[in-house]
Length: 467
Ligand SMILES: Cc1cc2nc3c(=O)[nH]c(=O)nc-3n(C[C@H](O)[C@H](O)[C@H](O)COP(=O)(O)OP(=O)(O)OC[C@H]3O[C@@H](n4cnc5c(N)ncnc54)[C@H](O)[C@@H]3O)c2cc1C
Ligand SMILES: NC(=O)c1ccc[n+]([C@@H]2O[C@H](COP(=O)([O-])OP(=O)(O)OC[C@H]3O[C@@H](n4cnc5c(N)ncnc54)[C@H](O)[C@@H]3O)[C@@H](O)[C@H]2O)c1
Image (cartoon, rainbow, N blue to C red; front, side, top):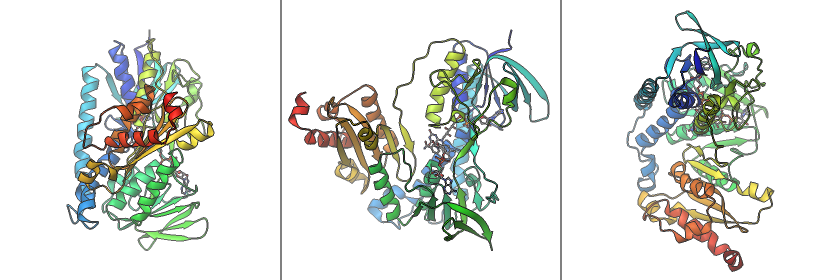
């Protein structure tokens, strides 16, 4: 007999959803967490802190009001790092409190310490006070997440040469910043600091950024960033990062030298599997510390060991991690679970936001699907006028054969909320008629769906509409 039905390592989105799901099915569950408080990367260094920082920056700068009052408008003239952090601490405390309460009312047991395998059913936990404990479980879920990739040649100092964990503890808002890597993390922070009037330069070896996003949306986004004087250097990678006389110097492979007060290195993350002693249970991680799983059950090569969340790789979102954790837990305790819908939304909380669900125009072309697009600009909506928006667009792609929605892509204010209308229509297999025939609240930004739907409808030939 094992002590627990399920032991979960890690209390991030995957771990906590899994633990509560198994507890709801009346199973005995233990969560092991090595961090000081529950919540994982998502609560302490990732999703929630970065989104809180973004909201604080937009509020204190008066960013959303600048369409009316001009680019020099500010709610608070001097914004300090302490101003940014104040709201962060309050938000994080609330998040942890809600999680702790969820665990306790669902009778999920917790243990603080670092877990490692002794065999496929046994874990050893080194607690913070040095005490060693052992637990056994019928099933184990690895929800250990990732940490920032910190290559040896980058002289991180936690003050001016930083990774995305360090950035939450800066003492001053820098006047200039070089962001290395135009992935989601790099771009979110680059645009947040640019909104705070930091002069930002982004360096990215690829020819563009965010290549999983519809090209037209990325072009609009890129134009907006350049329009507010952000420097985007594509097709070049950072070779050397140094500190010189208090300033940071980044030398690119081309020999070009950039200087700034601060450097944010955001070129990827690695799975936190190195301390798990995977060999003891017969598992092996790839060269980025990630684990392979069955995408339907989240079982690893060892059937009673599951992995979910960022440690299994793409898409590495808090949202998808939660779903993966829930599915893994149900399978692990023998409960039925259906496969998640094929399309999930991706939200990039840059300034401005991007959100997308379904196929991009490039993917539709690759699949040779005859299609038509409909586009709406937020400045065409009355809500957009009221809000003073001069940018923002929503694009929908429809099949000409079935008239079904294939993809929705949004850049601009509220994109990450708006996308869910498109997601629902997409996953419920709705057609362009949904947008043409339904009434939308007015004035709202959601009216952009109506405008884009009509735009596509007008472009479709009468034969398509009768089919
Ligand atoms: C800056 C940033 C911004 C982000 N923004 C968003 C966003 O806006 N939206 C979104 O959906 N996603 C976002 N993400 C991604 C999101 O944070 C992750 O997808 C999510 O946290 C992954 O959850 P997880 O459950 O896999 O594990 P994590 O949240 O990574 O948590 C893993 C936990 O496991 C613990 N652990 C690891 N090893 C052990 C061990 N051996 N023993 C005990 N405990 C261990 C760790 O201490 C940690 O607490 C962001 C990420 C970052 C870094
Ligand atoms: N809003 C969200 O949902 C959100 C926000 C942040 C992070 N995340 C998740 O976290 C994960 C990790 O994000 P990330 O941005 O760290 O990683 P990433 O792998 O997505 O991006 C890293 C970028 O750095 C570039 N790069 C690599 N080496 C470089 C060099 N030497 N010089 C310059 N650039 C270099 C890469 O080309 C790439 O564009 C993502 O998969 C994402 O899903 C999600």
